[in-house]
Every structure is written in structure tokens, then in C-alpha cells.
Length: 74
Image 1: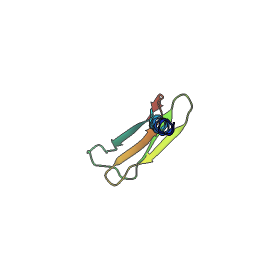
Image 2: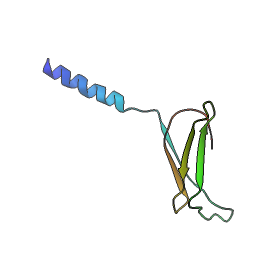
Image 3: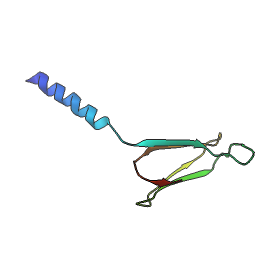
Image 4: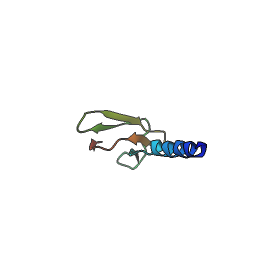
């Protein structure tokens, strides 16, 4: 009986770890293709209005991790 409890415990842990989230990563550039550091990037959920925000790094790259499934406006 003890073996069965350990197997069930490990299977439950694997099920909890699954996620449906995505991530969005991109680069903000000016008209001459130069990177823009410190730019604010916003993603807004169309249905709820919930914002997700990021700021570009020194190379102009932004990263929005853990984006739940929905329709968004960037």
C-alpha cells in the first residue's frame, strides 16, 4: 500500500506543473532599426482590460512571461 501512495503523490505533482500560459518576447526599434532601451510595452486583455507590462532592456528587448490564453492588444 505504501508504494501506491508514492506513485499517486508523484502523478499529482506532474499534473499541477502543467500550464497553458505563453510568453511574448520582442524588440522595439526606431525607424533606423536602432534598439530603443527603456521603452514601455503593454499588452491588454481585450475581454477584461487586464494589463501586462514590460520595459525593454539596453538591447531593446522586452519579455512578457506567463501570458494566459485570451485575445490581446499590444
